[in-house]
Length: 145
Image 1 (tube, rainbow, N blue to C red):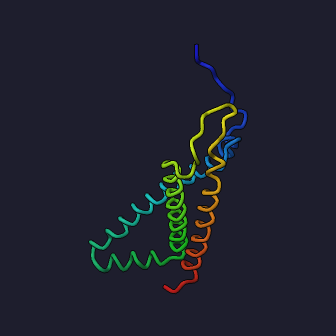
Image 2: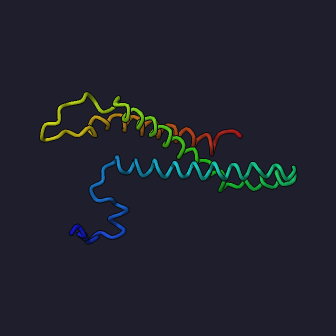
Image 3: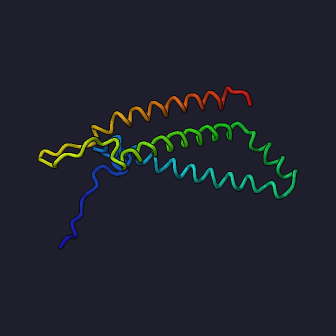
């Protein structure tokens, strides 16, 4: 009984595209991915910093390697991930505390979604995030170091 099977007509494209997913689902996935990326950076940073215990020569070799332009691009991506993850996290805290979903209403059919109340906050957060990313990109690639 209960062994119902559904055909996956969309294949991998359906998984990537999400079908009827809303922007909230994509922000959720991006929040998870940026969290994993920040964790990977943290582990890489600990590893790179631990080279110092092998002496100044090892440290200097590591620092020369990290001056490579590919690491500058990686630094920018870490900044982008951090900016998005931090601001989206603040947005999620507001939602969890009920500050962004509006006043509670009696559930009468047809049910209203609180997503419409969350969209203005989402737009504000994404605009601030874009401004921070542009400023960080300018500082990373054109700022004085």
